[in-house]
Image (cartoon, rainbow, N blue to C red; front, side, top):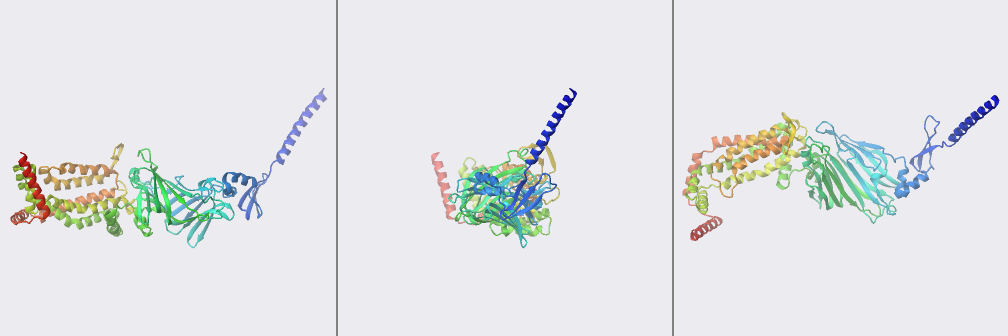
Length: 619
């Protein structure tokens, strides 16, 4: 029994050992060598991975071809472009191309820029400025193949090749259907330049791409926040484009579902102080634009301002693509953009018509001169002083007109009292008095209207001046953004969560100025149809106090300085230049002189007299 037991146990042991040996032999037999094809069919590298080897061994085989099974599987879904999915470049590898001011990272997947960093710029909180990062942008071509497959290049893999031509860095990204047939993106980055050459071309794809369908270029971007106030930055963030030669247009602040234009020269995704601009060296036949506002709540929506999309149909020629373009990633700086001589200065919001003219040819050159040797804040003050001195003759005429009205005030009061029950006669006699005295309320309005183009031009200049960005002055850390003296623990609608000092000073100054200029007008009886001057006197400073709390502190500094200087000029003119007694004597002389009426004045008087006569007859 004992031997039998031993024999049974031995038998069981041998069976177990045999089973283990058989399992080991079987598994060793099924450990096949794995190979990955690297390179191109003419010069491929076969990477052999042995599970028992301590390192990989690389050998070359010029006759090797992509794995036929993998290639067949790829072509079943991608058609001819399935070839690209079998190459070693079919990974999410990244190639970096850069110069002194710009660093671009381009992914094999899609051959597109996945990161664009401006080396010399920082955000409001000191971080690098990225126009493209964290999948906020997409550049895609939608292709229709001859076998009616619709493919998107953003999902396909390009093969990179980085070279140099002199000082230029050239990155070629090829989406291959064979070794010598491909779709290619070429990025050429020149030294110290935000503008790169960019081209899209194909070779040997006339039998691959369906030429009866346009290739759709789809460019998208979600604009990163770069400034302290996201709502203020969002106000200057929009799509702009040039069309029909030198006409330009923009989406504005409202959401745009779709807008189509023809003969497009360039398209700009402006992010206030930074822009992405795609330029055609010939022109795009047409383009559609979509803009979405991503800021609904300043406390919640803090990462992006707007989302942009542009869809551009590209025509093939003989079944091939050949588009020569330029691509700009950089500051929305008038001087930089204007130097390209491509009408890109229109990207900077300097105002239309005469307002833009004043900024481009007067304000910007003069401010550049001042800021060349003065700190930005001091340069603003000097600019304001010069503007006020330039406009002082116009303001002098305005003050003289106001002085005349002040002298005539007793006589006007007499007319108002005498004809208080006859509004038409009162108006008629008042106009006669103005005509004899050589005075008129309009004489004070016209000089004020003449100053509006300069004031509005400066209103556009300061928020758009890139040279003010991150320049400090007194308590303001950044003249292109709001200054802060008190952080509030809550947010006030329209006002914000902070208190800015420059708008307060500007509001006080404008209140004092309007009190001095409109005080005498408010003492007079309110004329029918005329604005309530007292209401305006209180409304203007209040408007500035509330809405300018989130505006650029440089703009508030300008208004504060401007009104302060205006008050000073007004006091000098009033106390040392204008003599009320002399003005009164001159008015009396004018009243004695016979004054010939013009045809319009005579006709107006006749109409008034006829209306008065008709009114008496009706009684």
